[in-house]
Image (cartoon, rainbow, N blue to C red; front, side, top):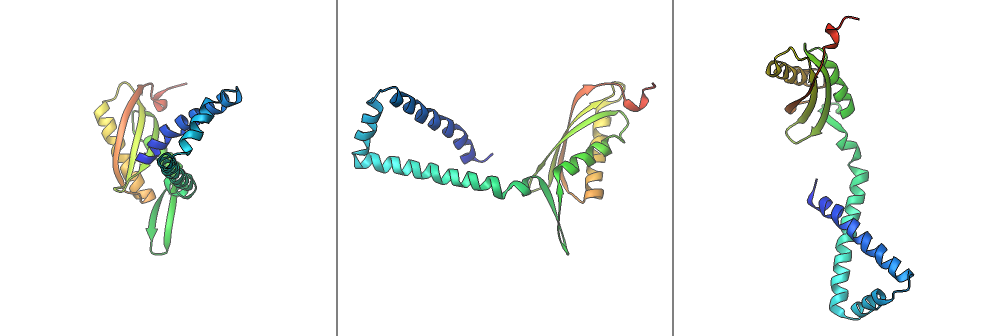
Length: 178
C-alpha cells in the first residue's frame, strides 16, 4: 500500500471525528468551537496553513478517488502481450487453474491460492492442506513445480515466486473408500 493511502486511512477517520464532534457540540449550544474557528480565520497565517492543509488533503482525496476507477481492471488481471494485441487473464481464472492442477499432486487435499502481480512476474501464495502420511517437503516442492509449470504452459504467465503454507492435515480425498 502506498504511503499516501496509509496517511489517508489514518487521517480521514480523525478528521471526520473532529468535524462530527464539533458539529454535535455546536448543535448542543456550545459556541466556544465557533468562536475559536472565527478567531483563527481572522489571522492571515492561520488561514494560509488551514488552506494549504485542506488543499493537500483535497488533492490526495482526488487521487485516491480516481485510482479506484482507473486501476480496477489492471489489478484483477494479468496481461500477456502478443503480436496481435494483448490478452488479459483474470486472477480468479488463474486461481482456479492452480486449484485444478494442485489436485493432481498426490497427498494434496486442498489448495487455496492468492495471487499478486509484481514487476518480476506473478507471486503465488498457496495455503495447502495435505495428507498426514506424506513427506511435507517433497509434496510442497512438487506442488510448487506443478503450479509453475501449469501457469507457464497453459496460461503463459511467468511466476516470480511460489510460497506454500501448509495449514492443515487431513485424509486424502482420492484414497478414501465410501
